[in-house]
Image (cartoon, rainbow, N blue to C red; front, side, top):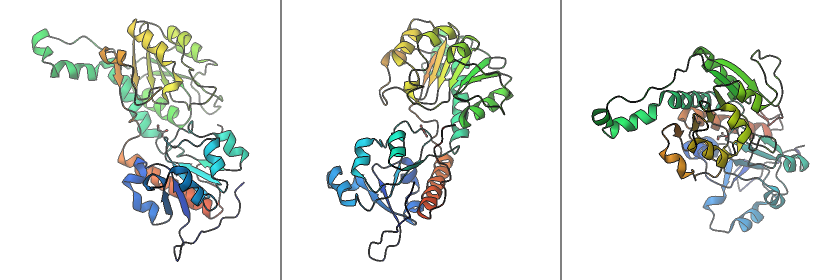
Length: 331
Ligand SMILES: O=CC(=O)O
């Protein structure tokens, strides 16, 4: 676990050093919240090659502040032998080698539930958009088709739909709460059954898909969940079924998803994330039953402010030897 913390002095500067490898939206919006308290070492602004920059600070850097683009793998950790804490201004931690961090006694914190409400709103927005064809009808109006071709095709009602939530963590719970108010029925599958949650639980995503009109992916990406939505799950969802992904692109076998959408084997999709961002399979561009977004579900100033506050609270806890506020756990 973390060693007693040392405040590294730079002349009279008593702020603890925190390494950042890349600029993040949270830091870009609220730089002074961080720099008031910490001496931020901005690797991306250095003229030195990264390995030289890291070598210069290797023995004095105990904390790393990153985001979803900050890949923390064994090679990086090897270069930072004094590192004892990583905090990221995101929810997903698939970019971090958690096992290697554990092995090296490096504590990891994410944002806990700070983004959950915004992400849940976005998931519901995507579902409504796919079912009621909001984006598609916007295109119809802009292209002048309302006047030239007449009425736009009907969409589908949200109320009464059977929604399967994959991953009943903080985001899944917020999605369920919202969709219940719309009159949907909720079921879920999750790594651990949640005794406090009364929605029906299925043991596999395939069984969940068989009993759902739409599935919403709210789980983290790891070795167990990579391509958790595969050919079998998509065919279980069926011709009218909808898949919404606000988790990570690689939760779905994207090639298979594209094949099913192009072939009309599922009803539609709302996708905020992709396997190889910012690449989006171009076959999807022509499909009006698919809503595509550029990984924006968490992007509100309110979310970013919360994310800055939580990251700072985690860094302060670390530098004063207190337990982290939102440590990454296995539940
Ligand atoms: O994708 C966004 C996040 O993980 O916070």
